[in-house]
Length: 85
Image 1: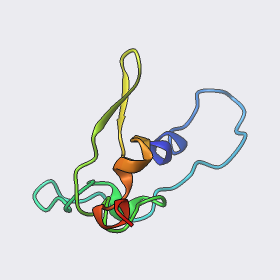
Image 2: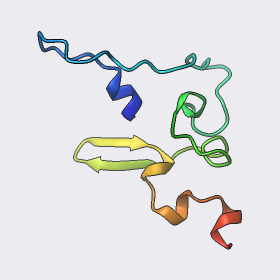
Image 3: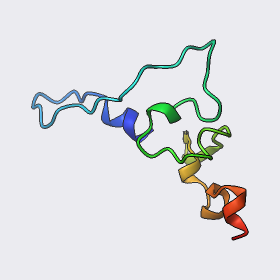
Image 4: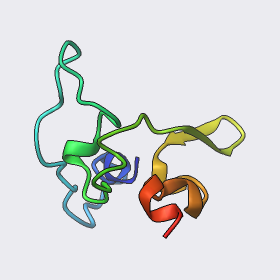
């Protein structure tokens, strides 16, 4: 979500900074990656987590939400093998 928001232009007349580009290609709707569909392009993707399970929907406020494992409680974002270490 953060990467997507950084890539959206503003309507102000002044150009303060260059828009952030998101690396990679949008996956095909017919060949969606396992886990989070954005993980191959995400700079904060957690190996063994983002590539294995769908991210939960997290409410951020009235009418606002996101899907990202990084927004969960810390114990929920660790792979099972690390939770019992």
